[in-house]
Amino acid sequence: MQLKRTPVTKSFRSIDPQFTKTGVRRSNLIDCLLANRISINQLEDLRDGITPEELSIIIQRIYDLNEKFILDLSAVDGMLRRFNLVKNNNRNYEFGKKIRKGFRDLDDKKKKIILAEGDSWFNYPIILTDIIDRIRMENNFALYSLAAGGDWFLNMLTGREYVEELSILHPDVFLISGGGNDLVGSKRLAAIVDPRGNSNEYDESEWAKKLISDADKNSTPLDVEKFTTGIQYLSKDFFALLMFFHLQYYSLIDGILGKPDKPGKFSGMKIITQGYDYARPSHSKGFGPKLLNWYIPFVRLFLGHGSWLKEPLQLRGIPDENDLHQKIVYSMIYLFNEMMIDIGRLFTEKRNQPNVFHIDSRGLVDDNGWVDELHVKPKHAMKIGDVFIKCINETASATYKNVYVVSKF
Amino acid sequence: MPWFRTLLWIGTISLMIVLSVKSFRLRSTHVSTVEAFEMADQTEAKEILQSWNDASVEHSVINSIKLDYLFIGFYVLLMINYSNHQMNKERNLILNNLLRFNIALSIDTGILDIAENIIMMHNIRSIDEYFPTAVISIMKFTFAGWIIVVWLVSVGKGALSRKAYA
Image 1: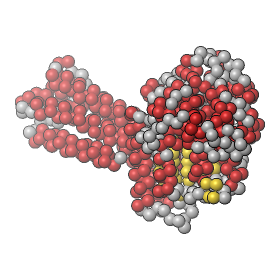
Image 2: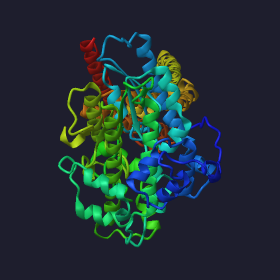
Image 3: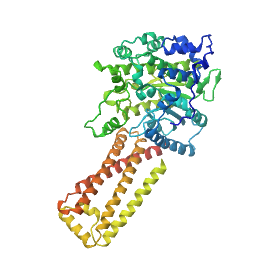
Image 4: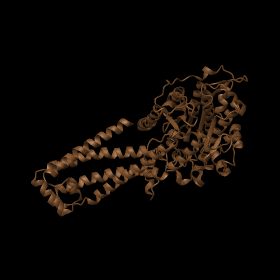
């Protein structure tokens, strides 16, 4: 993906004099966040007025790289970029055709203009039918896609392509899927685990513990054994990254919706997020007798299977006894989804109206439902897409609060 | 990308025309076509080859087979492109899976066609070591037919659903 902003590395000192509303030095709060020793109040304090420069500093320090290297790392290039472009060009060509036929009708509330930004769950460029493919099948939607397989959330925010399209398209709905590649792309998973399994970072994170205590465990059950085992292998950098996602999503959505007292151009827009299912660490090539599953070995042999989850965990010497690798991923995805749900809650409370919804796919897909470590079979992607459609059309109410739990539909 | 699909159509149709003209020329000289050679057993193949030699058209036949490689490239890509495009529009899971399977079948069809051409060239060069191509040919046409039928069913269903919406 072509970045529109020239990477600029700013020194930490440049924001040092800034203080939060409560008079705390913001750089101190960033230090606390990076050390995973930040209270909920401090995180809220830091979140208010978070700047792109501060976000840049946080990610540079989490990844121990300067911004240029991080942007190089996160950029989608080569064949994958071309395939992404081909699929998006097809989608956007048809979007243009619909518009030229007079699709947009301000009096017809059923017709929706949708903008989608995201990763491979929204644009798997070859062979698979992804979530956006399913959503596009609806006749009352015209969908413009910026999504790109392999794209990092960081790259989406830095590229800011969605900003330009938002102002041009004025969509009714904005779909966003990001964070997966920031967690597991370029073997980053190896950098956020503690191979000894004696991490107490979860206990140190007041914020993460609150996410879990607030979780609606009736709708998405928490397997305590899996979670408590897996969480002991997540280092402080994982929690710092999760808080970084929280700040990024908050900043993105706040920028779109505007403040309650000063609503932006898109204050009435619906924003829908998603948070993946419990991905499956594996090196298995997936050969089997079912002819219709011919594409699974193909995808696994050529498109990165094993390199996102299994290999980084093995790289750090974490044994896979008692399904340990799966438990680590389970705890990551559980927390990631709760972080996203919390973002929706925050904006609902802040604005007194539900604008931000989350599609929760956790627990939907069984062991046989995966094409590779990260991607679900088309039938599951279509099922998730069905729930997005229900949320957009408002033909079903949320499972609870602002959350649609896919397995409940 | 419509320009890519247009390019594939132009290539496929142009080559179909060229190959048909060449086939028509063979028929006009009262000898069997390449298609007949594909389906022939050893005795018939020997007769066809002899008739090509007698009419001095063997060179033209070999050229047709060589040109067929290019045709394979175009029609396989066309079938993959159309199946993939339709797959991303097909909400019926069975048809969606069948359209995905079409991608594999298109590649298989191309491989079978290449194998058939290689074997035919071998048969032309040394007819005494004849290797039959009829089974390969039947499989190739069955696969291609299946691909087209699945695509047509999906397109037809989609058109009906759009009409109902309108």
